[in-house]
Image (cartoon, rainbow, N blue to C red):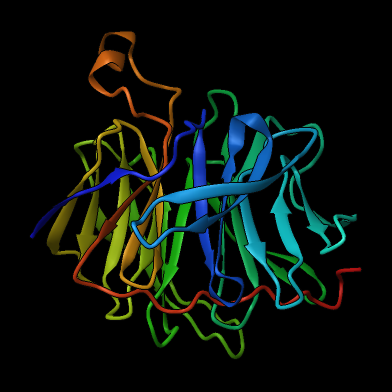
Length: 293
């Protein structure tokens, strides 16, 4: 099966990432990492996205999640910040040391409401990046040997957890118990070589939809890793995706393209949408842990 996504926003973003559909409020959230900004928008019946509001931070923002009260959890460069419904900002947790040449990147909420987030190096270090989970008593490190932590997703039952390490092109899988937080041994599920796997989401059937940075596409993969469908995206650096019902919302980046390819992708950096033969589950809300103010 092959689909083609179409532009959904007028604006282009330097590094659009981390789209999240807040079904209860019928709003789409996403970030522009390099602009240090969280955006909020609304979906039109024609699949367009109307940006309504944004919040800017002092440094990069890698991911955003929503809570039941409407507040947001924002992954800033090294820390997690709660943005209240009244726009007040409260420090939640430090994830990375202040002097570390890394930043927080993609994050997601697990089926029990815990927030997970990974990091990437801002220098040439390899194999030292982390994937962590915010707990009631602080931060738990799940991985500490990654090159570039990226997309996160869970099976519909929550018992399988998928994660991306972008630079080696790997999608990992492991057993996961949402009730206890127990995590099984990490295994390699698949490798993408034509481009790099970036953000991803899972549909209600448990298939993975993986944005391919440098590949101008989103791939749909079975839980066993088989290629089921491809979404062609008119932007070379396709960064992430999420479901709003049967509408797949895709973020892309205007930055990071070779100069000689810029004319080939004039819509790079815009959000894209496409209706596919799949449906997304309702995204879980972040449940603030006891350690959060």
